[in-house]
Image (cartoon, rainbow, N blue to C red):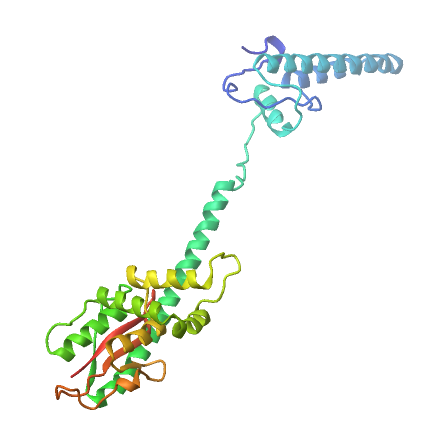
Length: 315
């Protein structure tokens, strides 16, 4: 469909666009311009009085034709599905009308605003990059701290003729290191597995709860939101010791010295060495073998997951 005769419009290419018209736009085609010029020239002939009268008539006629053409434009656009109720897209309508009238229109590329999803992706990418940088920095620091710790520990052990026997870092490292030590001391296999050592420690702590509760409280302060009594909390702790891969620490080491009746020496590159169960220390065992103390190494920076124990053996 197109405007006929004087408007000389083509609507080809307008389907799919729904830009609302604006009543304030000047709708004039090249034909209107030519007609206006022709009428003004005709009005310029004759006497001044005649010219004045003709000029007024010409202006009224031009105004009438312009209004009529504008009305036709609106009707034609409405027939194509454009709404006349929204005046927010004046620039689009201007271009459409000019295109219909045969006027060249150069479209300006829209500056697309980033969508919310795009903003979220950008923000997430920035967060991922920042997190990756932190991880790399932490790993770098961890490697540096581990190297320093290992160097200090090696300098401490070498003069004593000692070295480290690596233990699997699986949460059972304390008990596995003790098992490895018992195997070395016996010259064969250990009399206890790491799991049996766990059960032994839990049983000893239950039996001597009064000796362990003060230390338990210092490491496990009362939680105001918990309704469990102190006895219940301590029992839950003992259950974790005997049946999970809970990491062993000071409490468990104290129980192990009494269960095994052996002195436990703990070497560290980050802290002073610690000797526990000194009352069980002897220069020679009842079988005539050398010192039967258990020797462990404590590593604060061995792994990113936490602290670690290894077995210390003679070179």
